[in-house]
Image (cartoon, rainbow, N blue to C red; front, top):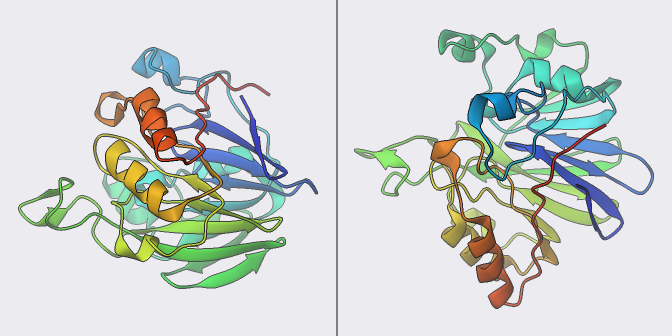
Length: 255
């Protein structure tokens, strides 16, 4: 399914992968791949939760691809979505060596046949007419996504992105708790994770939506597997009850 917002066409393709297309045809992808979401194998691996699934995806139409952190870096996924002249915007600490040591076979972003931009917190850049702001993303040391004070996503592991596409500001949180740094962002489309583990959950995402007052909320990064299950219907009701528009995109994708 594809939703429209302020002239943009937006699709959640599974896990942390969203596709955003501007009226002029410029296409941006967030965190493409992993868990069979673009290989067409998610359903046979993980079952029948309300999560986008479908055939293998290999559109190679992306002008800009943004990658938040190691856990969402998938070099095969990038090659499935990126066009020949794409620019890949990658958080500075993403490390293929560290990922490979952890058991996944990937290549360094700089080994891919694209323009690579490494970015850090506070960076601002423009790529293919898309303004990109890099914002912090991490788990609190004293929060539910930490063990003995060690966050699953410590500060400096990854980032989030505010993408201004045709004057519409779209905020993808990455794997993060709701942070004070997020409170004052100007956001039109808010794309939070609402998974019950590893990131902000549906309750804190709803609280942040109320604070940000976006024109629309579209949750992603949930129901991929058991640990990421979330009650999206309850989330939508919670957000709507606060006067914030919300939409769910849980249909199968195709091409």
